[in-house]
Length: 157
Image 1: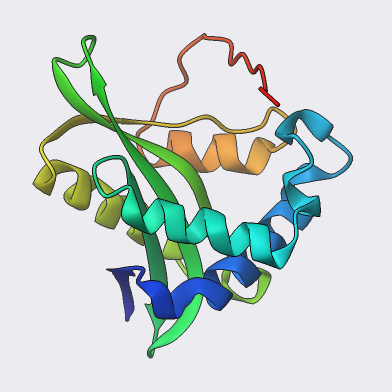
Image 2: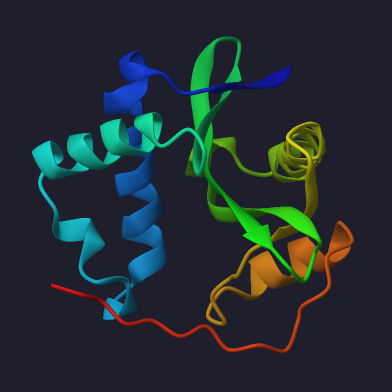
């Protein structure tokens, strides 16, 4: 049975491993993500630790089957005037390739929805890559509708 839990310091190496696998699949030559896949394990560790300490804004979830990590979600909380309160952003959701096709995506989104509501969130939002039509079909199948918006990025040194 799929379960989730909030990450703690002991999950650092697993979280890094899963995030690196996700980036390897997701980036596919698209450098919009600021070369995130090229950072060192030490820098990744710092990001993880900073995220754990940013409890007002960040939640890292590990999904497990029989106490073995099978995926993760990186979540962010924001205050949204448009939703009249808190909104949860699903920044990343990933299951390792051997753990797909088992219904984990649908189950994990239901878990994230319940978690978001328990945190007082009024909505969930996220973006998916146009180059990933499977993700678009999946999200539509579980009741999410795309909003016709653009995602703009500017990185600071």
